Figure 1 (cartoon, rainbow, N blue to C red):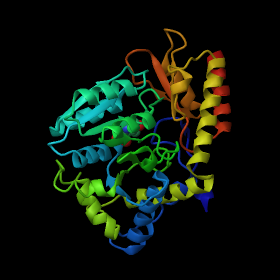
Figure 2 (cartoon, rainbow, N blue to C red; figure 1 turned 120 degrees about the vertical axis):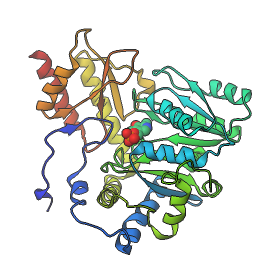
Figure 3 (cartoon, rainbow, N blue to C red; figure 1 turned 90 degrees about the horizontal axis):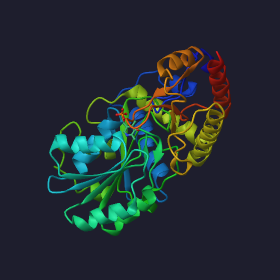
Figure 4 (cartoon, helix red, strand yellow; figure 1 turned 30 degrees about the vertical axis):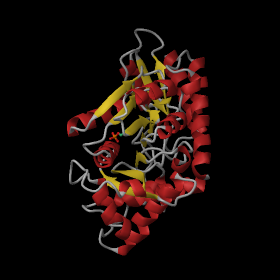
Amino acid sequence: MLEHIPENPYLLLTPGPLSTSKGVRAAMLRDWCTWDEDYNQGVVQDIRRRLVTLATENPTGYTAVLMQGSGSFGVEACLGTAVSPKDKVLILANGAYGLRMAQFLQTMGRPYTLLQFPETVQPDVAALTAALEQDPAITHVAMVHCETTTGILNPIEDLAACAKSFGKTVMVDAMSSFGGIPLAMDRLGIDFLVSSANKCIQGVPGFSFVLAREDLLAQCQGNAHSHSLDLYDQWKTMAPTGKWRFTSPTHVVRAFQQALVELEQEGGVAARHARYQENQRLLSQGMASLGFLPLLPEACQSPIITSFRYPTPDFDFLSFYQRMKQRGFVLYPGKISQADTFRIGNIGQVFPQDIHTLIHTIRDIKEM
Ligand SMILES: *Cc1c(COP(=O)(O)O)cnc(C)c1O
């Protein structure tokens, strides 16, 4: 049956939406009724259970809430619902996604303070400790796991432990890492974690999800700044019934369930992590041999996406991009101001063999 699913014209080496399997794309070829139990029980509740199992060592006391919209909608829903107007959030930022959390709080008028680091530097525990000691009004600490801006991996284990030692609520944007890097919320002390359908679980874009400690979410009634982004309300409807409050992206949701099954078949998060790491290792090794240096030191480089410096000041990324696309690879521009960079993602239906072919292709193009 999968032979009838068309091949993609090129491989997406991007931070998502990313290349998906034919099985995931095939799962979208039928329609679903949002009222019927085939969908609510068979698909939605199954996804919610699988997500909690992926996110924890012991699932008791944790819940998953699915939310319409891209990942940012989930982050906004989580901040707007978990943070009351009387609370104050400390945001650790070393890239665009940390700053976006500040933008959400700014727009909704919730108190926050920003602890900002350069884009190539990990937030550190000493700075977090000092900030928490200085401002006892802080109730929540929000951070990004893999800052997709550069591909830097932030030390959330240490940062969450520090925030917890001060008794703070911990929120993590694990958008680009969840499902691709092993992580247990209960062991790390993460209270709220946000991710979306089209990153390391390898589904297609269309919704986000929040994993939360149930006892904390239960205290969030009436907090939300927005009715449609009220995570508490969505949870109250979804947890007992599998229903979303408003129309859900049924095909996308069914594809996501298939993506979760394929993640399990691959061997779970540990196996996927190993594949991404191997992709990244081959990528940075191959690129170095062609004169492309990584932006980040190896110690904080994630296996998700890698930023490369332009090899020469007159490097023409757009023309490189077009030639690579003709040869079957779609790359990603850089997102930082400090240096001229472009990015190559390792996530999605991408295997070490693809990276070998990629490196050969770049070598060909460079020699032209
Ligand atoms: C992709 C991503 C988001 C969400 O972006 P959307 O475009 O709204 O899906 C948020 N944070 C991080 C770290 C991301 O990689």
